[in-house]
Length: 70
Image (cartoon, rainbow, N blue to C red; front, side, top):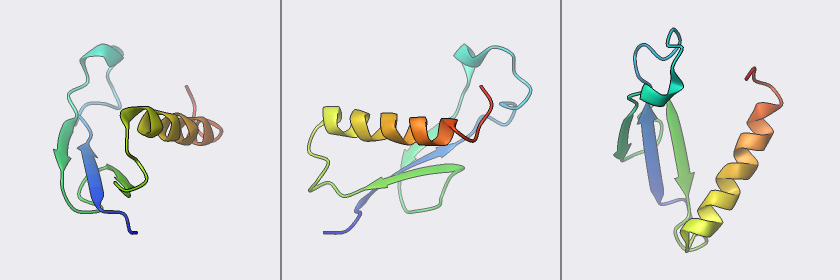
């Protein structure tokens, strides 16, 4: 199958200068690919539970963390 679900996140405009990460106001929407600053796309026939999705997102965060500062 193909990726058929897209989750688009548009970052809070002030995210780079905020000291308090608990109050980020990122925009969230379902939609087409590349519509936000972060797009997560997946195949709903493979991601059949939130547990599977969380596991994959955790792996993606671990991979991204190797090239980002905390």
